Image (cartoon, rainbow, N blue to C red; front, side):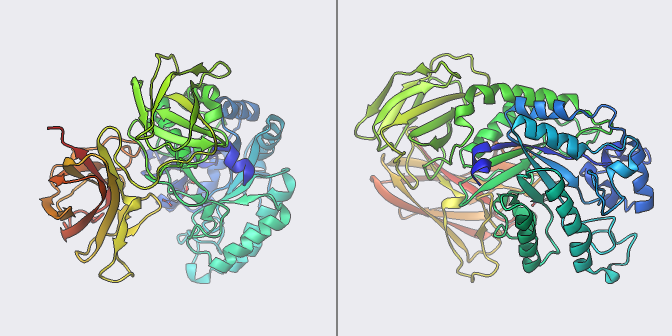
Amino acid sequence: MKWWRESRFGMFIHFGIYAVAEGMWKGEPVEGLAEWMQFRRRIPVCEYEKLAEGLTLRNFDAKAIVDLAKAAGMKYIVYTAKHHDGFAMYDSKYSDYNVVKMCPSHRDPARELAEEAHKAGLKMCFYYSQVLDWQDPDAFGNDWDYDPSKKVFRRFLDGKCKSQLRELLTGYGDIGLIWFDMPKGIAYEESLELKAFVKELQPDCLVSGRIYTEPTVGDYGSMGDNEFPSGKLPGDWETPATLNNTWGYRKLDTNWKEPAEIIRLLVELLGKGMNYLLNIGPMADGSVPEESSAILKEVGKWVEQNGEAVYGTLATPYSCDFEWGRISEKENRLYLYLFEKNKAIRVPGIHNKVQKVRLLKKGRDIPIEFTKRRDEEIVSFELPDTDTPYFDVVCLELDGSPDVEQGIFEQPDGRIHLYAHMAKLNHTGGESDGITIDPNGNIVNWFRTEDRAEWEFAVRQPGMYSVLLQTRGVKYTPWAGGHRVAAECCGQRMEAVLSDGKKVSNAHSRYFDERLSDLGTIRIPKAGTRSLTLKLLNCNPEEKAGLLVTRILLERVTV
Ligand code: JFZ
C-alpha cells in the first residue's frame, strides 16, 4: 500500500464504445450515467456493438493524457479495461468483443497508456467489472438478451473474467491495482478467490474495496461515488469522483465542477488520509473534453505549489475538524489547509512544542510569526496576504510526532461540533435494524423512537449555548425534515419539529441537501465533561432518509 498512500491523487478514465453514443440513443438523451445506457435502454448486444465502428481514436493521444494526469499532480491512472457492457477496451485474445478487433483503428489504447504511464513514472491500473457483464450470458445484468435462469456465474468467473484478468496482468507490465466494481452477486469465497488469482499473477497488485460487498476483502475501501465522509474512517479509503455528473462521456452533461470545488474535495480527503480518484471521460475520437483538461490543469497549479502537503500525508491527528479548514500530518509536521483567506487562525489542543510555522510556497516557504498560549495550548498566527491560488497551506513544525487533544472539545470560536461519527448509539430496540453509522460517518437508518444517540464533550466556557441539529435528505433529493426530536443536556430538555432548517453549504452540497435546525438554547453551568442525548419522538414518513444526522452544533450565545 505504500505507493497508494503516497499517491493520494489518481486519474480515473472511463473510456468505451458508450462514448460514441454520448449519452444519447435514437436521438433522445438517456437518463443516468452515460456508460449505463445499454442497460437503461435494454439494448441488445447485436445492436449496441455497432457503436464500436464510431470509436475512431483519431485523436487519442496517450502521452497527452498521461501529461494531463501529471499536470494535475496525479500519480496513478485507473483505466476501464472492461466496464459493465463487457466490451474489452484492450487487445483481448479471449473475446473478439474488443477495441482492437471491432474499432476502425485497431489500436490498443490500454497498451499506449500503459507504455506512457510507465515512462512517466505513473502507476498503470485497470478497472474491471467482475460481476456485471451485459455481453456474457453467464454474468449478471443482461436479462433482455439472455435467460437469467440459464446463467452459471462460475462459468463467467473461470471463463471471461479470469481469462481477461490474466491477459491484463501478464500483458501490460506492472499493474498497480485492479479496480473491481459492483460486486453484488459474487460470493465472499469467490471474491477471495479472485483476489488470490490477482496476487498470484502480480503479488504487489492491489485490489479495490469493491471486489466484494463488504470492504473487508479489498486492500482498501472505496466510498460511494462522489461521497466524502464527515469523519475519519479506520483503514485505507478512497473516493471515486466525477468532474461533472457522469463517468462515460455525455455531451449534455455540462455540470462541470469548479477547480476550487475539486481542490476543496481533495483537501477534505487529505484531512482524512484518503485518496481522490478523479475521472475523465474521453470522447469517441479519444480526445479529452476541453473542460476536463482545463479544470485538471488549474487544480494542478495548486497541487504543484503544495505537493509537500498532498503526497504521503496522513489523516488529521484530531478527532474532529475545525471550521477554518482541514488538517493532515506527516512526520513531525501538521499541514493546515485554510478555506478562507482570513487573517487569524487559532489551533487548539497542541501538546507539542511548536518550532516553526511557515506558509507553503514551493521551495521558498514564508515563515509566519505565531504565539502559543501555554494555558490552552492554542497556537495563533496571522495569515499574511498571499497570492496562493485557492487555499493557503500552512505547516506547523513540531518537536515530535503530533500529540494533540483528542475527543470533542470547544473550539476557540466558542463552537462545539458533535459529529455523527463520534456518537455512542443505544439500540434500545435491538441491534438488528436500528440506527447505525455509515461509511460517510452519518447516523442513518433512524426510524424508531427507541433508539438514542449520545455525545460526550469537553466544555471550557460555561454559559448559554444554542443547539443546532444538522440533518440530511436522501442523495439527489430535497430535504424534507418534519421529524419531532428531543435533545437533553445538563438536565435540560429541548423539543422541536425539524421544519425549515437553514441550508448548509459544504463539500457534500452538490449531492446532498443538508439543513441546520435550531432545537433551542441550554445553559451549561460549569466547565468540564458534558453529555448530550438525542431522541426521535416522531419520524416523518415523507423523509425517506429517516432522521439522518450528520452533526449537532453547540454555539456559545454571546450575551
Ligand atoms: C459504478 C459503475 O456502475 C459506474 O458506471 C462507474 O464505473 C462508477 C465508478 O462505479 O457505480 C457505482 C458503484 C457504487 C456506488 C455508486 C456508483 N456506491 O457504492 O454508491
